[in-house]
Image (cartoon, rainbow, N blue to C red; front, side, top):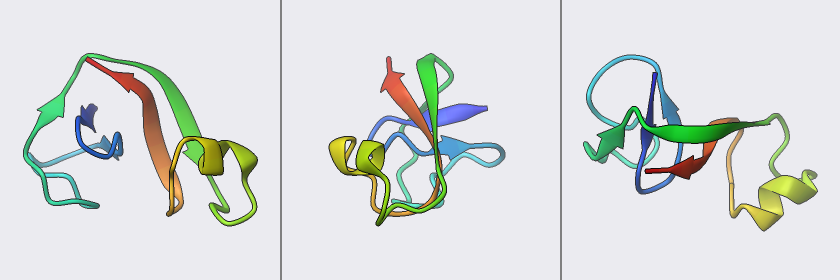
Length: 60
């Protein structure tokens, strides 16, 4: 599992991010944020997440 350095979305397979199409992925990340409803989630608002999915908290 890798995390995109641009949008922090988790990527299970492939070499490009499905959200932002970046190929700048890292396997060095900390924390995991799972967003189910981005519109109602306070954590999603603070983290600037606009769509449901799995996100890394910090990507190195």
